[in-house]
Amino acid sequence: MSGTERHSTDRSAPSGETRVASPAVLIVIDLARGAVSLRQPDEFTRFSVAVEGEGDLARVVGQSGLGRLAADDEHVVVDPVALRALAGPAADEAWDGRFLEMCAYAAGKGWVEPDGGVLAHIEPSQARG
Image 1 (cartoon, rainbow, N blue to C red):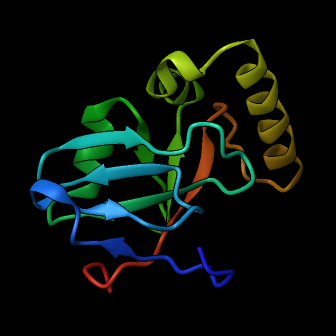
Image 2 (tube, one colour):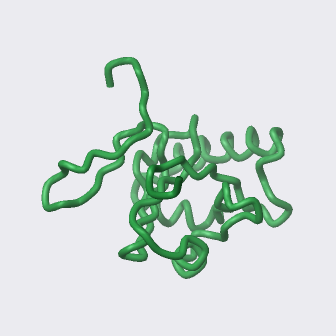
């Protein structure tokens, strides 16, 4: 990027797919397809969710196994086991170490739920308002 980070999407992606252009986004939830994907699995400095399309966010999060929508509707409570599964082959021993460091940092800030779920901020989007 040009030094000015923006939280946006690139709608000119091939085959009509919307691509998240922000390096801050880690988890992408496509409501229309009911799909969850992990972008930038090695990015541990910003833990957030981007929502694409229209649909029921709480339902998609729950059905995907990712976790649950927090009561404040501004965070997704992410199950660490689900996140590791989304990381796929990137989740090696080094990844595990960095992930544990991120979780320890989050716990120190109060961003880990009693059940171990980690709060991920939902990035603002034009569609969500």
